Image (tube, rainbow, N blue to C red):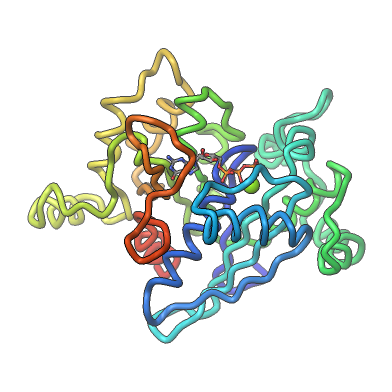
Length: 306
Ligand SMILES: Nc1nc2c(ncn2[C@@H]2O[C@H](COP(=O)(O)OP(=O)(O)OP(=O)(O)O)[C@@H](O)[C@H]2O)c(=O)[nH]1
Ligand SMILES: [Mg+2]
């Protein structure tokens, strides 16, 4: 592995990558002793205007990512026990994503190719990325070819040592949007990475607060003893009770997979919609300090530190 504690975020189109990026930043900004050094590769406009400004000034969810960017978050701070942790969020443009990740006409989905060992050799991918792709990214130019995005994605995948599968519950269950990965991909990643977490986002839509202190200290301690991995058993039960296998089989499969594969970590986050869980307003929930609310990102930091 190239980097000490490098984390890759995996999510498809509309998978809440931008919202997660803004939410993590907000959490860190609000927590004393932590900091983020962010470096943006590719479209700075997508990130600065489409994510930062929309969320931090407009109190709205991010714009749909247009040209694509890679946000590299380096977590710093004296409270952070692993100062070299970096999180890479690759937000491909919708079109590029369609071709590169969801699979074009003759192409197996990218993540599926990884599992089948059908991608180019990781060393060749790295060389190609460093030599022919990275310079443009650094100049703020996003690739226009799906193949180039594909190489950028694969390079980060192969050089990370932890992976987060982000699961946007709002898009996947309310809008029935396809997820770019399935349980087989998570299983494969679990063999390849030192740590894998499935993180549902938009749990506010299910009326769940990841920071609530239920079900009580003793129960939580007991559960911690039984399942030492980082998992929110209450969230798992909460979602399993409410998510219908008939209407969203892929999400139900993932929940079931996580339930039986205890080494996969599982906990939720949200950047709550002001109207959740009743109505979708597209406006973020005010935090009473002139900003927006974020929930559960303390767990993300804990997970990054483990
Ligand atoms: N209620 C709620 N909705 C969310 C949350 N996170 C994401 N969403 C919804 O999901 C939508 C898509 O999120 P984005 O962050 O734009 O997803 P993305 O992966 O960056 O999407 P593209 O860049 O367009 O591929 C948002 O506009 C919200 O409607 C959340 O925590 N709570
Ligand atoms: Mg985006």
